[in-house]
Image (cartoon, rainbow, N blue to C red; front, top):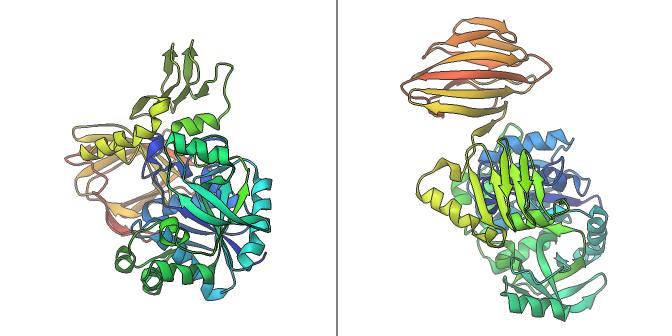
Length: 467
């Protein structure tokens, strides 16, 4: 299967897992169920270098997470705007078709959990002959119950290893879901596909005219940016955003389904994460600094502060350093409404946490008030920030771990643990980590404006301009 290529779509926001998952750090980039992120698990699942499609804000985190697990991607494609899964898949198919028109792409969302990798690979093996025989193949999950949060697939005529698809069904109500499961003819729609690239592109053009042409223009006018490829903004933004299901699968007569039991979950809610996590004797999932008494069937998680719970049943309590969610587990699909309300109020907590990720590491805002901000800064070994200056603020740096190489105006010098320096407003400066361990420092900003956009980049190895 040398020309079977994993394609990972990593554009989702995962808002139903707020406040842990947010648009700038969504669920696929988090360690929710183990020592690896969902993206890392997805990239390792087939054991072949993937094509990854993600957005501008996540590009450096995606690249770093792949590097951490030894994955060298075939390409990392940057979408300028989200246009759903059909255009993203079309871009990947066009890239692969240029070098191998007979390639099969295994299209996978980056944020799904699959606990039985062997079963997954066996299902892919069954799907390959179907795809080679001119089928667009989807994978149907054997239902474990009448779930109303998933779409369903009705199987039609039998094929070796699977069935033709008779129809796709939107998320049903409970009574309908119960009837589907009882019939034995339906599986859950996993959103994972094995697609011959040439067939997929022809079917997409037939059922969603203009999509392939627009994606081809976005590629032709795009550009390389370090180890990323940026699609052309205007061409891609002009596309009609559609899911693969709506654009192709629901209309094509060449779709097959391979049923599979592989411990699959889309981790689309706190109750789904509770279901997939180890529990104590009372059915509680407890993560972090949590003390729980006389409670059962709860998901309780702290990302730092102490959380205590007494007498709860079937609840979700999640505390981060800037937000707390308390919800009935049976209503966790409504968390998105909370995020929408925060957005309407212009609250930054809707989309971002206190930690900001950069190609050189990360920073976390510890405290902020009138004319000041305190940050904890982490710089990876060998990494360096841009040469920059700020018009409205001065900065005090105190090294708490590692070694810092500091450039301030026309001077360069080394700071070690417990040493500090002062960067006056308007002064060109740069911070580097020349060592082999992470550099940690505390930065105290003071001035009339301490926003993140007060940065004039004079030189940057990552190709970024002034914010």
